[in-house]
Length: 241
Image (cartoon, rainbow, N blue to C red; front, side):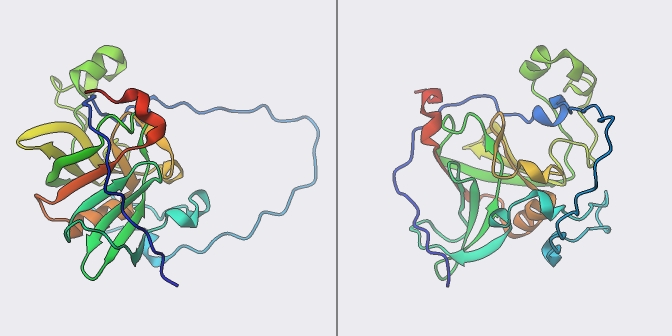
């Protein structure tokens, strides 16, 4: 049975905060000390088969490995669904509270993608924005304000030419650049190799996707497509007027 989802018509007003993806570079890992006592090994659960849409992409400029689907709930996998909406075909809708992005298709259908969203999910919700253009394997240019807060980013600052594209670049394999009129909002929809962050509020404002998904989206979204962002009520305290 097809999923029926209705798009709410009332959206929060937007604020404007600087968006970025610093967690990709600023994250840390934890290690645990090995126990001195040996315990019997626990059988690993059977691995989940990888659907073809998440196979490795060796032909890309920087070969992309297969998605580790054991680290992402199937509800976040890309799928096409019934999606009645008043928005025109081609519109991109980011459902911040539910961690989904929809690309509206004809006949009351849409492609739905799981996404990671910004922690300031209320601050830039609303209408009036569009996908200005797209870039394959983009450079990352952290805003000067971010570099001021994180001096370790100075080597990849705008003044130093930014970060070269690649699998470790925070913008991943594709970036869709969001403008309001002719103004760059500094927000992006972009790829990420960290598939386990899909479904979470992990960035400062940008929308992150599995690399395979953002490539699929970029291949199907036209420049100039309208963007609608549904606010997360839990982030209402961040709304500015």
